[in-house]
Length: 292
Image (cartoon, rainbow, N blue to C red; front, side):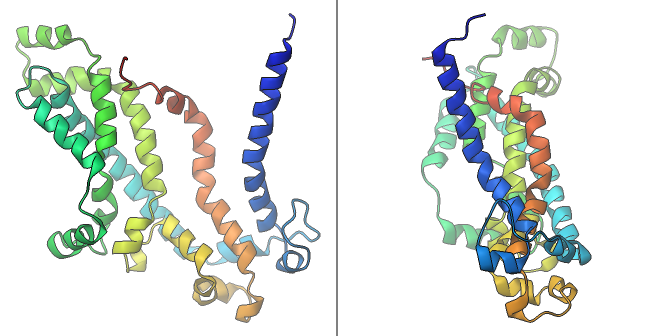
């Protein structure tokens, strides 16, 4: 089979792009495996002058904050994803029905919230003074449960389901709730799988709402823990990890390598999961799309 020159150029181009994307992550791994002294002396290098596992020893010697952060993140990811998928489907289904009296007003209401919102201060007041969700897991779950973008994507998918199926079920005596749970949800599996991955990644990477509403260390998710470590060297020196570093002085604490080690540990699970579900992200580009 003859290989076209254009195919070689395209493949070479994407190979270079993939390498450029992978290089920063490889550099992070190299830094986390380097000694602090080599970083200060030679800077960031893919091939360190002096390799060391000191950063990982410090991270895993006192794993309580890390384990607690993983537990919080996994909890909000699982609960939030399931609840969000259910609420999204429950909202998208009626506005996808052309025989629903309030289809247009509700669709406009959902779309309107994509363009305008109350702002950060009213949001904070609502969550803390009216809903009293400060320092609770609900503060990390509820704000992302209903996304107007996900609702519109789900609506676009449900619009493609044949109305004859619903009418046939009605003729057989099925009520609306039975139609939704027995017929619509099973037929919506591709859309639910795609949106579920998007939602799960969103919850896994959640840190901003935690920064606003979480003061109790018991409810700090993994990503907020990572943000603190990446942005505040003082947090490292005052955390239990500093005790492991043989009570080093602040200037001697390996902040750079520990930061990178924590980044690897925090992103590890998703790096393993993503390749197995990548096909759903590709499918997600067309789920809910509209015909021109």
